[in-house]
Length: 502
Image (cartoon, rainbow, N blue to C red; front, top):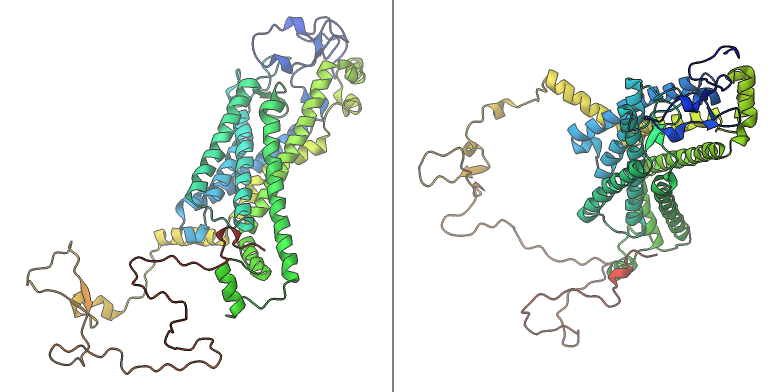
C-alpha cells in the first residue's frame, strides 16, 4: 500500500497510485489500452497492467495454471498427431478431418504455451501495454490464438457437414469434398487472421497471452466466427433431428426384417427405396463409427462459443468504462483514498469486469481441448502400435518358420507349381516367370481334356422357390432381335433421386 505523501515516478499532479498521462509521451505500445480519466486530476492513468488492479492477487496464478494445463494438452495432441503420421492406418483409423482438427488444436495451444516459456513483459511503459508492434511474443501468441480458434471452428464445421451429408442425404464424400475442405479449412482462417491483425491487432489485455483489440473486432473476427459456430450447431442438431425422425419412423414400421429375401425387399431394392428399419440400421452404423467425432465437435464448439461470448462481454464492459469513466468513479475514488490498496476496493470493481470464476472457467475449458482430442480421436490401438514399433526396433520379432520352408530353395520344386523353362537358359532374378498349376496326375494321354467337373449336377427346385425353368414363349415380352450393343437395365418406377428416402 503506497502512502499519499510518497511521490511515485511519473505521478505528477495525480493522487497515488495514478500516473499523469502527459509525462508519458506516445512513443510505442498500445496507446488505446491506457486507462486514463480526468476525474481525479489532469488526465490521470491507472498503472499497467490493469488486471492487477481489477482482480485479486491470485489472478496471475489462475492464468499460469491454465497455461500449464495447455502443456499437458499439447503432449496429448502431439501424441495423436505423431500416431497419425507414423503408425499404420489400421491402428489409428486416421482421416484428414481428424488430423487437421488435431493440428488446429495444437495451434491454439501454442498461443498459451509460447508466453509461458518466453515470460514476456506486458507493459511498454508504466501506463501503456505492449502490442504486436512492440512485442514479438505478443504478436506470435496473439496470432496463434486467433488462428487456432478459427481453424478449430472451421474443422468442426466441416466434420459436422460431412456427417450431415452422409446421414441425411446419403452422399458419399470423396476427393472433391476433401480438396474443398482443405481449401476452406485452412484458407478461410488465413484470410480471417489477416483481416483481424490488420484492422484490429492484438495486445496484452489480461494475462501473458495477447488478445484481439476492441477496435473493429466485432466485424472482422467475432461475428464471422460466431456465424460459423452457429451454422455448425444448426447442422449438428439437424442431423440429430433426422436420426430421431428415423427412429420414430422405425417404431411405426411393421414390415418384415431386411435380412429375409422376400419379394417386398426385392421390389424395394429395385425401386431404390428402403424401409424405416433399414434406414435406422444405416444411421446406427454411421453413428457407431462417428460418435467420437460428434462428441469432439460439440465440446470444441461449446468452448469457442463460451469464450467468444465471455470475451465480447468483457470487451464491452471495458470499452464502456473507458468511454464513460463516471461508471468507475466509486472504484477510482477508493483507490485514491486508500493510496492504491486494491484489495480494499475490489468490491467496487466487481461491476466493471467479468468475475474471476468465469474467466477461470473459460481458460481451463480452452486448455482441455488437447486432452479431449486424445480421448475422442485417439484409440487404445495407438498405444499398442507404439509398443509393437518400439519392441520391434529393440527386439526383432522372430516368427515361427517351418524347417521345410527354410530348406525350400527352388520354387519349381513346390509340388503345386511349375515354372516354364522351355529355353533352357539360366533364369534372370529380375525377370518374373509365369507360374502355372501342374496338370492333374490322372489326366489321360493324348490331347483329351481332363474331366475337372465330374458328373453333371441335376437341378432340384426348392419347394419355396418362386422360379421354375421353362422355355420362353412368344407372348413373354422378350425381344428376340439380335443384340448389337449392351442395354441399360431399367425398372419401371425407379427414380435415382428418391433413393433411401423414408
